[in-house]
Length: 71
Length: 186
Image (cartoon, rainbow over the protein chains, first blue to last red):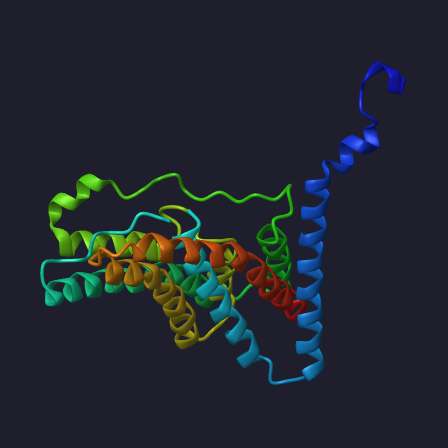
């Protein structure tokens, strides 16, 4: 099938719209920031239990608030 | 904004009683659900931490809104007809269902990690702290809307708009926290 048939290229279909690509880039940047934060935590050395609890409390607060505001 | 029980009464004391009942319901619902994986983990053995790490990484990806990862909560909602049981019991019951985090709309992907972590940690006080934080966070918007609902200066819609605006960015902070936990556990 040629471009003249009006069908988009397979690669273009996979890549999505510019908005979707931008969202994907933001998502991966957020995940990369999380990896960096985890590595900093590991580099800081033990004791990590308090830091883990603090992150869990943060996740719990964010989860609770988001659930009430974004439904 | 998720529907919340009408805790505001005709007097300040009445409002405080209904809100306290709602808060008690939230805390007990949250603890009741967290106790299940905690007991399972304690009795049957704790899952290895790398399993928790893998789950945290997956949930971080879902929280970061990768387009092919969408988690859905229960479609069930507290029926408004339950309001017939009375304002205070209704507030408590409503709080309990919200506190479970599973009976109605999913709070966020991080909630699943909190439950899974309850099965890994051997510390019940730590579970109480984390579940308590979840409960208080769920009570916060109800507290704000209740405090503002008696005013007729139009402050409530504006406050809700601002809260929703802030909430739309919280997912990224949550994803960072989850991914950091994944790195620590893997």
